[in-house]
Length: 158
Image (cartoon, rainbow, N blue to C red; front, side):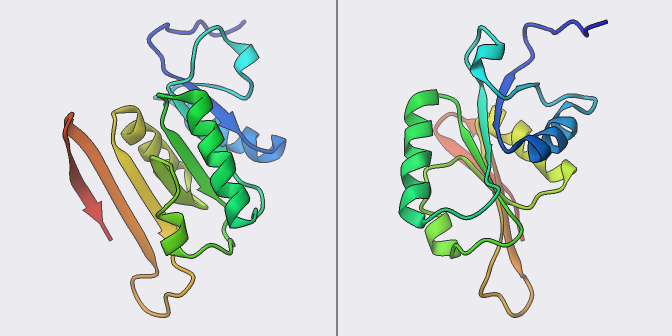
């Protein structure tokens, strides 16, 4: 029997390779669910509240920037969350220029769910591995939650 969907449940569009998509979808739909996850907009009649793109391999920087810009234009006003593979060639300087509301590198379930909730609430989240880091801290983790429409508040920085 199909589970009845609450119409107030946010719609999450997940763009990923099939195997990766299955795992990410399971994480996002664990109770309490982050939202209703679809992999094609034809699976629903509504517009997504969040678009998640999980890269399965690196793209040239220019191509990645172009694709993200096109996705932003297509799905506006939905925020975009980019998930990078564990090993990626991008510098933190380049990554921080990308037109995304969220950026995660090889996240675990709890971090992915936290990022989805933060972005759905109007905030931003970055958790990336720094290629050049030789000492602690090896990553940057920043989460901002929108308290007032005009000013995000820093919640966590590692």
